[in-house]
Image (cartoon, one colour):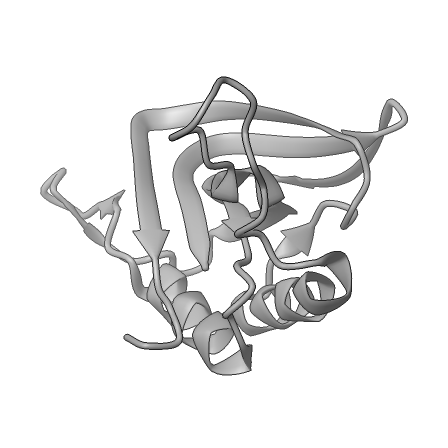
Length: 142
């Protein structure tokens, strides 16, 4: 499971030009799910995101966790795009929708995230805070 985590001042996701979710200060998570991922991986990654210390503390150091801030999570199978051969990405490593959607929902439930619409064509708008962007990756084997 891969997550591109961005610290944001605000973020929103639209489907068919309509806002389906938005947050103020917090984290925007673009979540990619691999074929070998399972509920345990989703739960471990959710916990990792919740405790990431990427916000400024009283001294201005990046040392505070999410706390009362919000999370917006968007499904992003393209995080598993493989471009090692040729110029067109292969998405064979991404989990099929029937496997990925329940794991996406599990991750969102565990983090308390607002959500985009799984499988929809979405427009994601964000204002980076920093910018601070991290790539997190966990797998079933550790």
